[in-house]
Every structure is written in C-alpha cells, then in structure tokens.
Image 1 (cartoon, rainbow, N blue to C red):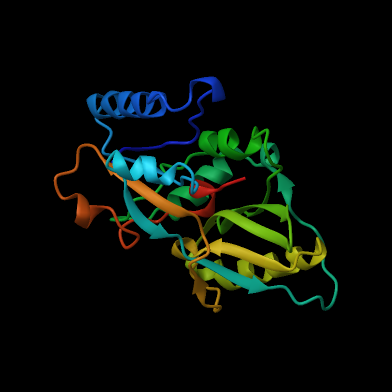
Image 2 (cartoon, rainbow, N blue to C red):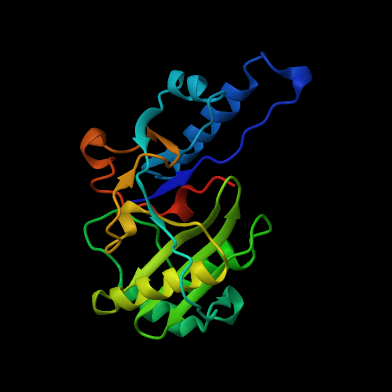
Length: 229
C-alpha cells in the first residue's frame, strides 16, 4: 500500500481568504491519485483542521502513546550512537527481522533512517543498537518535562527485556522524566497507553474498502511517522 503525508501548507497573509489553500491541496490530491497513491495522512492543527475536513479528510483519532516514568535510581552508562555510526548491514538485518506482515507500516531501510533521522535539521537523534537484536531511535525533547522520545523501535522478541532495560537506563543517564513510545510499536512496556498523540486525519484516494483498511488496528505508525516538532 502506498501513502503520503501532508506536512506543511502556508499562504502569505496578503493572499489569505482567496481559496489558495484549498486549490493547492486539491491539486496535490489529484496528482497523488493519478500516481497510484492509496491515501494521504496528516496531523493538522486546530486552525487547518476544519479546512481539511471540508475537503474530504476523515478524523482517524488520536494516536495512543505509552508513557513510562523514569526512576532516578542508580547509575548507568550511555551506549547510544549517532545515526551515521550505524552499519547499514546491521540496520537492514534488524529491520528485516522485525517486519510485521499484514500490517501497514513505513517501508523501512537504512537509507530511510539516515534521511529521516541522520540528516534531520530539526532535531538530534541517536540510536541504541545491538547487532541482530534491536535498533532503537530516540531523541530528547524538552518542555514541561524532559521526554525521552522513542521515534522508531525494532527488536526481536527474545531481546525485548534487555532493550527495555537499556532504554530505562539511558533515559536515567540523560536525566529524562519519562520515556514515550507509540503503543502500536511497543511490545513490552506495562504502563497504560493514553490518547495524547497527534490527531490523525486521512484522505482516501484509491481504496475501495477505505473504512475497513484505514484504522489503527491495521496500521502500525511510530512516533517518527507522526512526529510534530
């Protein structure tokens, strides 16, 4: 299945109210439909949400996020690395081991990870890697709390306990208050998930059974897929 994400649309203040936003958006809809894209998804803010709904977007709901508190006990070491330090073969091996059949998810590759995270100008991402076992990508987001945000998570089942421990230890090392992760990509945290993620909307283009195909039951988005900076 092929999907695209709508990211930013802006109109100069001197030309607002002339329908430019609608014309631009619907032109992209037609272009994507002709290219065989199945649906568009995005996370509009409160200002642009009504316009998207009028143009046929449907509210899918808020992404569920698990929030795991970090307990400041003991000491730990930082074994994380920059994205450019990851061996491409190691990354591809772990990604291929963790692909989920029958669920919609990003078509991950080492090149995608470098594009999305390694060369991202908006935030600094790092990774925890154990060859053949797990690859965890995260960043530290500061605000009212210091958030250890896991944006993408690849882990074989037998390494889940160790991966969880390494995450907590590293979050403690960098003085984070909480670890956050998309519930859909989280196999082991025991804390309940909350509807605190972004409001997701979708626009059907080429799906005949849209209502059944597009929901969080069949879709496995990560925080990296829907991240708002």
